[in-house]
Length: 227
Image (cartoon, rainbow, N blue to C red; front, side, top):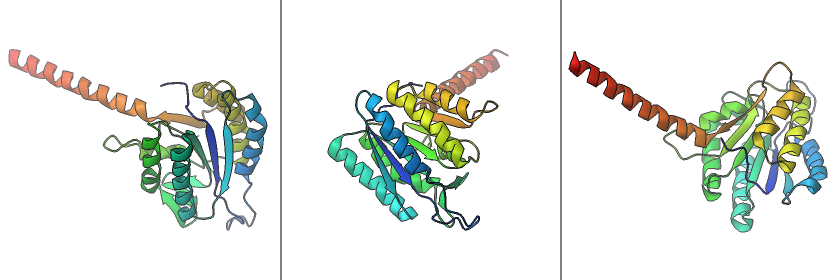
């Protein structure tokens, strides 16, 4: 897959508990922390990049924010990376019963990805965010160019530590694979916690599988006719 992520604006959407009902404690504001770190890094970025922090309190507000990001792109033509800091599981993201399943996010991201010419990058900074690959279906339009996220549950400290390295690498070097490698190396020496998935590669693989299956069927029919 290409190592280059095309972007000129970073949108961090923070959707977290004011008070977590399970712990009785407020969520760590990982989005706010990363926003501050990125602001300090931006001077090194070439070409210049903007970073914006948005706080939402519901699934409805999150979907509305994605639509506003879409309208922002149509006005400015600044291709975004969208990072969503929230909770999640294998079914989707969100807070308690006010969550979004992957199909709902698919509908929100797809129009924006189409408008950008299939350049949208999304980082789901949520537990099991990598399960968002279920949004990429062979018979549907691609909802993003690249999806990034953790394959397991993650702690807030892992998110902040890893994404600081990730953003420094992509802002300065624009190499997404190197950024993922470095992010994983500072989070764990034993496993690959964060992954990147590319929709272009999905469709390429399906095309290759299709032609491989056709060749196999032809070969089988040929051998049968000669027996």
